[in-house]
Amino acid sequence: MHTDFDRCVRAVHSKDARFDGWFFTAVLTTRVYCRPSCPVVPPKERNMTFYPSAAAAQQAGFRACKRCRPDAAPGSPQWNERADLVARAMRLIADGTVDREGVGGLAARLGYSTRQMERRLLAELGAGPLALARAQRAQTARILIETSDLPMADVAFAAGFSALRTFNETVREVFALTPTDLRARAARGRGPTTPGTLALRLPFRAPLCPDNLFGMLAATAVPGVEEWRDGAYHRTLRLPHGQGTVALAPRPGHIDCRLALTDLRDLAGTISRCRGLLDLDADPEAVDERLRADPALAPLVDAAPGRRVPRTVDGEEFAVRAVLGQQVSTAAARTLAARLVAAHGEPVTPPEGGPGAGLTHLFPSTEALAALDPAALAMPAGRRAGLVRLVRELAGGELALGVGGDRSRARARLAALPGIGPWTAEIIAMRALGDPDAFPATDLGVRRAAARTGLPATPAALTRHAAAWRPWRAYAVQYLWSADDHATTRMPAQAAPLEARWSDRGPSAAGRADRVPSGRGTAPDNP
Image 1: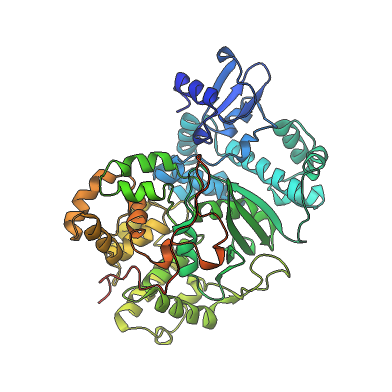
Image 2: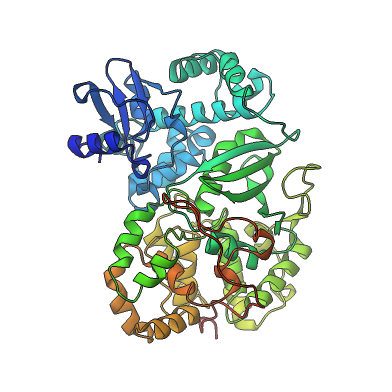
């Protein structure tokens, strides 16, 4: 979008927050770059230039605006929607791959040469992988400076800088403040914090309807690994450098995020995973506009615009849980997963008073599950065979479900596994791979809703009809599920005082009364 000068100018003059993250406005006279919704008086058009990423603006010598904090804008929706090289690279960079494995490691994960990858990133984003990773390190450093009392040396190394001097220079260059000044500026408005806990705000594009996001996560929460408590979703995290716990709660205008990490080098990747879990970088206006064009979906969209696709913080974990959940109710799937966690999960000890105080385990790693005797898995023989083959492929690297995974290749690999049918493959594509166009046409909830709303009820006919919803069929599934009064589509009961939906027009009250949920998502995948 940054190449369409007139459109960008209109967005800046209207201060349209929907375009935050799509492009960045750089002001030639002040050498500052902003998000489109910056509250200051817009500069003259002749003094504006536009960049596709914060890294490109920084590389061109512009510093971040202190009013709108463009480095903290929601990410571009493109990196979730697209599945090409650039999108996969951006997802991996956000997860911290360059800091952990270098540019060569990033290229190896993508299956391209370093030169090819750098050329593509430069052509589309105006910045290479090192510049993009540097911009992320600067943002991580700002978060740690403003939300913790860590010594600056610890902040520097936790954010991924190799030297304190580089850290100081980068912070001054990007934010036009020294690290000490940045902390002093933030401390004036900062409330009390729990020792060992980071408190963050995760922005999103309005509107956002949190019903199905938190409803799904709470209704399917695995005891010991996840829980809904005090109006927030809590869970444990398996991270590259250690463990962590997180609490996520919906608030007007942002998601409240509280983190406790054993190694602060995991901060940037953890934020990226939490944003992915709640689909916070989506473009709800574009999604709802396409789906509202179908008369059958329009009433569902109008009733609660801004539904997101609940995803996952760990693709491998979700794939295992999807197989466990075949042909059983939501409650039964939770029970099976809880038994697996109790027997083979890794114990954790959340910090006292921090997020996840009632959690006990990490979900078992695929390596641990692959080493098990299959007879130890108490489930039908067909599903057990499918699970055993799945965890072996995941542990061996033949099947990649991480943030930079190739969606087409993963789908083909899933289809070749015994016991993995269309429903399971599409659910994994939707929630583990983040495919916005995944469509489990055989899902019973989808078929019931289709029949109720006048859509074709058979999978083949519904798939043909749903072609008009592309590339947003995964979002159409969320709206169809919302037609059924089920726990997965409603905010959990403990959150009743919270306002359920937020949009540019302001909050509206929550909807329906609670009742005992029925099964969700059963399908004839596994014989």
